[in-house]
Image (cartoon, rainbow, N blue to C red):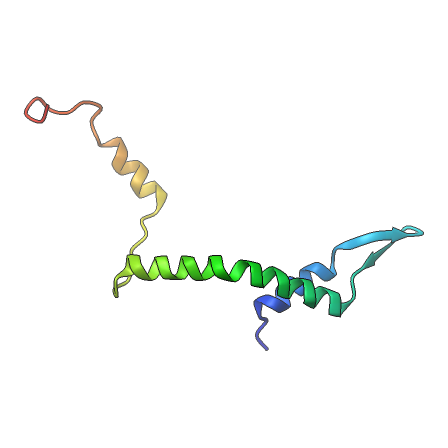
Length: 88
């Protein structure tokens, strides 16, 4: 069985105590957790969709290669601090 984002958020919310009674943690019921998870997802969906569209634009129909940070850092160390005289 695959867990949906709604399931994951609801499960995480069910572990959070909302108060303590006589030293015993009290958590939300399943229905409340699912309702709160649905609200959270509805708030996140527009941003997730915007990011998906932006990634699709950047890909332009072909896969995008993401360079590791170490590669970029190493490449930047080879860039001189000053331009050569013929570029100045």
